[in-house]
Amino acid sequence: MKNVEHIGIAVRDMEAAEKLFGSLFNTQPYKRETVESESVETSFFKINQTKIELLEATNPDSAIAKFLEKKGEGFHHIAFEVEDILSEMERLKKEGFVLLNETPKNGADNKLVCFLHPKGTNGVLIELCQEIKKPDL
Image (cartoon, rainbow, N blue to C red; front, side):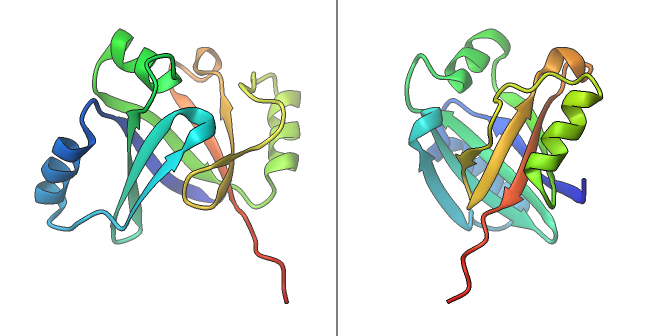
């Protein structure tokens, strides 16, 4: 793992959360994106090298909606940047970690992602992220 890529925060109302965190960080989000496969709207802030991702459910059956129902707004996950997501997934499986997806998925902010089950990581949802590289032309 290279470094912390971002911290995810689950929110019920994206507009209100962007206003709140915009005031807190004294900046505006640099990107807003819908990830249809996860039924989530994301909004990214960047403070120096730290990225904060706000997550709002777009479907009442989504993982974020269920999280909000069970735990309320707040810390959702921490994401780590990896160089090679496939080899990192294989390494973690050999170490006994449970992956929530067996193959990387397309995530927000131009990333391939995989999540580790929080039952095996002291209750913390861990996301692995690898930048999707554009082919050389």
